[in-house]
Structure formats: structure tokens, C-alpha cells
Image 1 (cartoon, rainbow, N blue to C red):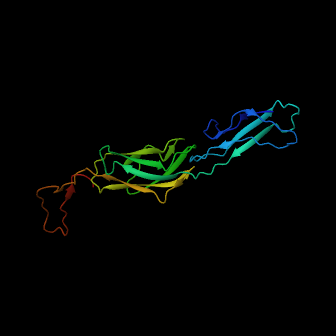
Image 2: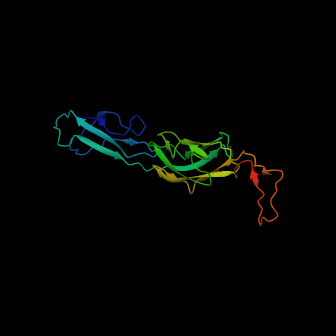
Length: 219
């Protein structure tokens, strides 16, 4: 009888398995034979895959009730681990940008989604903007990134921070505890302090006097 691959989710030709079409013969008195299926042991995290093998055209026999066999290749590769890295910090308040990159320990056959959490002393929209809150790494790739951009203001202030953590990973795992800290470097000058007037006067009978002092800008 003839046999051939008739479908399935696995890829033949040595990618996931090797099985060429062929003919299987039973010698007189023999009731059991095997079709050789060679499975490729790769390092790619993926879903379990199937191979469908169908028999046909028996000689001196007839086809039974089951003519198609489904073989499942169960994946045994661990999901990739995710690490974070940072470039562009400290970033200038005047439009500076920093990049947070998520990298996989190995490529995956599935999309890996890295959800991020943001904290720190900087305020979103007021002090910085971000290109997204998650990083999606497509199948076969090993990294993806988000960009954070500083917002310019005229306020003299301390340098501010943006702390980025991994909150969850889909189709992967966090490698330990991953965290990066971005610094926004303030570039506004300190305000000047001055009396509001060079001189003032008041009646001797006034019990309390006010001498006004002002800043050139808020701080």
C-alpha cells in the first residue's frame, strides 16, 4: 500500500520532521509494519505540531476504517527569557530621547509580549511622553523597544527619573527582576531673587512692615 503526508501543522523537509511518501509491503504471515518518521529536535519554543499520514491503494487487501493517522510532535523547549536594557540616559529636557529594549534569550515561533510598568518622579505628558506601554516581539525576532521623549518646560527643578519595570510577559518569562531607570536632566537656570523695589518707607506708627522680595520665575 502507499502512504503519504496529507496535512498537519508541522513543516516537513527537515524543518520539523522528515517523512517521504512511499510504499509499505507486508510479507506473508506479517501483520505489523512501521512507517519511519524522523522528528527534528530544535531549540525553538513553539506550539505542539501535527503530522497527518494517509494510506491508500492497498494490493491484496482493502482499506480499514482508519486510513489517516495524526502524530503530534510535543514541543519540549522552554519559553525564552526577557531582559531589559537602556540607551540614551540621562536625556536632555530639550527633546532628549531614551530607548528601552527588551531582548529574548532565543527566538520564538510565537509573538512575545512584554508589558511594562512606569514609575519614578517624572510625570507622564508633563515631563515625558512614551511610544507605548508594551513591547511586542514578532516570531523569529529577538528584540523590540519603546522610546521615551522628554518634554521641555521653563521650570527649574531637580533632575527627574522614570523607572521602567516588566509587569508581565506573554509566551516568555522575565529573567529575574528587570528594571531600568531613565534620568531627565533639567536644563533651566535657577531663578534670581530680588527686592521688588530699591527703597520703601512707612509711618513710624506702623507696627509691622512688609518688604517685598520676588523670584524671576517659579521653581
